[in-house]
Image 1 (cartoon, helix red, strand yellow):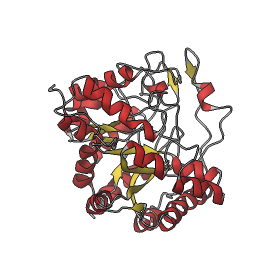
Image 2 (image 1 turned 45 degrees about the vertical axis):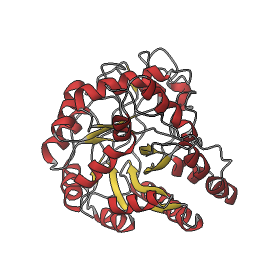
Image 3 (image 1 turned 30 degrees about the vertical axis):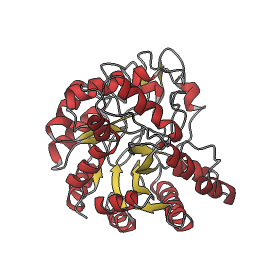
Image 4 (image 1 turned 120 degrees about the vertical axis):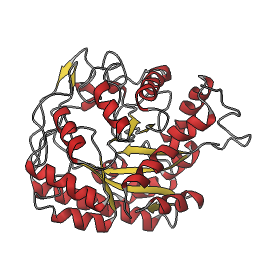
Length: 365
């Protein structure tokens, strides 16, 4: 690698390099506390979230995929459950279609209301041209994504409705089973090969997403489901927030064989900041150095090349390293990569260009 020609910050302290992020759960956090004060704090700053408009501006976050996650009831706090030397959490019960639909519509509404209330500070984007235009005028570019497609029935009718509302990315499962596929459990150590492949509605969902130009997110899908999508899909393979299984053998991470398949498809993997998916010991521990993140990026670059690696933080959905803390702390990672010898061009690719490129190769809008 060639060292960066200039530092990753301007002399005025503003981020000189942008970040477009593959995954955050800010909408879930607002959904769980949908008060006027929560909306106000997201729009004006001072929130407890990893992402609000003020933190995004400070950290150079220019946009990302805003996930809708229909929540499951967990038997305990996830951070506590993933803090031991090993764990094997049972898959949560499947979520009924009406429950998934209600929460999905509610979170989509939250994003649309934030767009209106922000008065230009946030823009829901449905094409790469709209993302580029939002970034150019300083508006946070938000792409509607669902993580766990329980809102979409086996007949797929709701997919067309959500697409019209702006949906451009679908993760058919979270870490639970549904009528499309089998989610991978939270298990360490474990292979991602934990169950059967896609169900028949899942196979039809792949085809319909290809027709519409909707990105299919393979994060949380078990390995057999991954290979079914790889066989069926004519789009790039994408995992918005996953890491390298060879470095952290948790079931959520991707094997070298899976990474090679992503590379062959000209797809992208977004580095997940969740410490349980970064650390060799699989622990959800915020005292995780940036070197650990960089080792995953190095390994991803080796398997995927410079056009296949991006960021998928899992902001507001996971315990992330204290060295970053929130979206305002993204410059710490950029500085670390520059100091480690990543060139400015490579940092730009990882930071935002690779996401826009793969979206442009996938979307038809």
